[in-house]
Image (cartoon, rainbow, N blue to C red; front, side):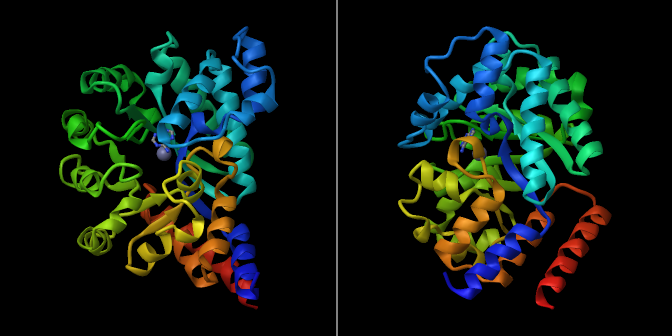
Length: 343
Ligand SMILES: Nc1ncnc2[nH]cnc12
Ligand SMILES: [Zn+2]
C-alpha cells in the first residue's frame, strides 16, 4: 500500500462521519440472531452461527433479501428491537459515526403480527439511550417494501402516524426490478404533505430511469445507491448540478455483484464529476463491514486520496437531515481532526 493510501485509511478511521444508509435489520449479527431465536423459542433452519454465516454467499439482491427477511424473523419483542439497534449504535460509535439515519422495515414485522408500537418504541428507545450513553445522534427513517403494493405502504404509513415524532422520513427498499419508484407516487405525496423527509433506493440493480423517476415523481432528497447513474452522463451531470446526494454502499455492491471488483466501482468517477457521494454500510452484518471498513476497502481499491476521504465525510454531513447549526459543529470537528493529521 502506498503512503498516501495508508494515510487516507488512517484518516478515515479517525474523522467524525455520518452514516445515512444502514438498514437496522441488516445489522443483526448471526450471534444475535441465535441469541434472540433462543430467547423467543424460534427455530432457525441453520444448526449454528457458522452454518448461518456460510449461507451468506449472495448472487444478487434477491438472494440476499431472502436470507435477510429470514434473519429478521427472530425479532418479536420490544427488547429485541432495542438490542439490535443498540448493538449497531455501539459499532457505529466505535467507527467514529457521530450521526446515523437508520432505516427500518416495519412491514417485515407487522406482517408477522408484531405490533407497529413494539417496533418503533424499541428502536426509538435505543436511539435515545445511545445518545445519552455514547453521545451519538440517531434518527429513524421508515422504509416501505417495494415488492408489496402501494396500498400496503399507504396503510403502513397511516398505522405509524401515532408515532409520527419517532421517525424523520420515509424510504423505499427491497427488490428493485419490476417495482419502479412511480408505483409509490401517492404514498410519497402523502408523506411530503406530512412534512416527512424523502429518500428512495434507486439504481442499485435497477436502471438509471428509476433514479430519474425517484427524483421527478417521488421528489426525493437523496438517492440510496444510485450507482447505475454512471451509465447516463447527463444524469450524472444533473445529480452534480443539483448536489443530489448518493448514499453509496461499496461492500454491498461488491457482495451483491453490482460490481465484480471494488477497483471497478464508479464511486470515484461520480465524486470527480462533482456528485455529493457518501460512503455507508447498508447491511453490515451481511456484507462483512461497518462504515469504516467500507471506507478502508474503497480507499485501497480506488486509491482515494486523503483529500477525497475528507470530501466524502463532509458530504455525509451535507447530505444529512440535521439542522444547520449542528451540521456546522460536526464540520468544525471534522476540520480539527484533519488539521491535527496535517501537523
Ligand atoms: N441493499 C438493499 N437494497 C434494497 N433493499 C434492501 N433492504 C436491505 N438492504 C437492501
Ligand atoms: Zn439499502
